[in-house]
Length: 368
Length: 179
Ligand code: HEM
Ligand code: HEM
Ligand code: HEM
Figure 1: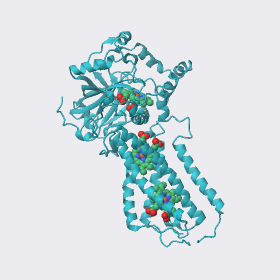
Figure 2: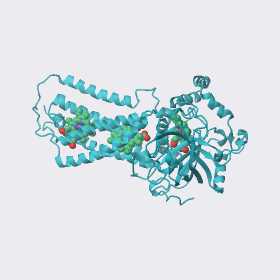
Figure 3: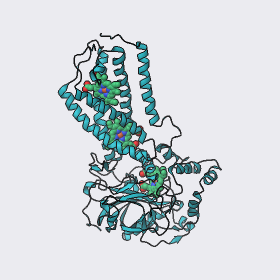
Figure 4: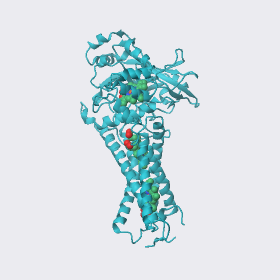
């Protein structure tokens, strides 16, 4: 064999090869976070949700109790000046959504959850879609995803000093505590205002960027109820209430977009913008059917807030990215655990699932 | 240079090999990096992962066509048969992985019901939405990614072994320049 004379013994070469391979493997392990136990990975974030209780297999790792709905988003066309997204062009577009409770426990009593959520997936024709998860709290408890992790760790800790320690280190949390303690309760999902809280960027047809937040404003007048009365209504009173209402006729919200002033920060969902900011009502959410989650169309949807159409973009708010990463872990796990959360009806034929294939979006305006 | 082999891979083959090697290594690091962070770079990395992965799918189709047309230089006659077999099998495995990984990624997003948006374009789903399919493809994408990286390390070690220890011209057949 044509061995070339040259410097370097085979032993030296073998060592060099070993070093190259070792460095490559170490760089990979480092990038994957395997060498950084303190890195806040999506897995660690999800593990902190609901800890120390074991996860409920097959269910969402947060906002675990919920009810699917379907309906329509009726755009009035006012959003077109702010965003070039197709769903703002006047018309009616199908929605798959989910009423939910801010708890990792899928069997929680409805009256036990302070935070109530509304998730929507709007599919205008063209294949692009918008997903958003909103909650009834007027602001988020903390400023950053890292602080949220610390809040989860503290509230799941056995150490009686953990929560007071967290509050002392995060004075802004007091505001959320006050809302949780003294804010009004309603007896219906239909009477809640749901807030997107995170700031995003609307991009209009000219390419101009408008920093925004959005909310769903209920058509039903909120009636304040005493939490003790709610508790007497049974574990599923909110689900029973909304089912009854929707059976009686469509339940509505107005999608309202709030525009930031140039002076407003857009990175901290715990700080609402001052009152008096310009708002634009861009359309109406109309809910006309509800379905149990186990075999409902929202079951296998990940309401990842970064699934955005062209015309809506993520800005400097760190939450959408953190939520996207964490929701994916939750979704990956619960889809793998589907056997632990059986469907109550026989699984639909493998033909395209009606709610999921953008291709069969009904023609605009044919409903309701 | 006293290479024992007369021919080398064609310049096009060598170009494809090295460009794709860089892209694939980048994809593996981007992949494990993006699923291990909750910072804004999660979204940035995902937005690179999808188009780069699909570019690899396009490139490997070209590469397979070129390989079928141009062939490959033979391995040195004195290379032990088991090594030759290992080389051949590992190369087949590479072609299979280069094809499978992007298709698994695309299929996994389809089965999850996510819109497959790449550089502003929305690609059609290649599979129906299904939780069991999603979880199968997700596991395959992840497991095969790690297998891919392990195979690359082995391939790298073998290439360097040819270059530094055996000095038999195998490395030069794919290497960037003739000395
Ligand atoms: C870093 C902070 C956050 C983390 C780690 C987190 C975590 C999670 C997780 C793991 C899920 C279950 C996802 C799934 O399996 O599909 C979820 C659902 C949800 N989250 Fe968050 N979340 C965060 C911030 C927020 C914020 C700021 C809001 C409200 C503005 C929000 C509202 C919701 C809603 C409404 C759902 C229910 C989605 C559905 O119906 O599937 N979350 N969250
Ligand atoms: C040569 C091509 C590809 C390679 C080498 C590759 C590699 C990887 C790796 C290493 C991971 C991280 C796995 C983990 O640690 O859990 C990953 C995850 C992922 N890949 Fe790829 N990938 C490729 C192509 C694609 C394509 C074309 C797409 C989509 C169009 C895609 C979508 C994804 C997604 C969505 C994830 C995150 C999955 C999750 O955890 O939810 N990949 N990929
Ligand atoms: C990162 C991903 C890589 C992939 C997917 C890859 C893939 C391949 C494939 C499929 C072949 C066989 C070509 C054929 O016969 O059609 C090949 C050959 C070769 N590769 Fe790589 N390669 C990678 C990285 C590397 C690296 C880092 C090196 C060296 C440091 C290297 C050195 C070589 C050499 C010397 C050959 C020629 C072997 C022969 O003559 O049969 N490759 N590679």
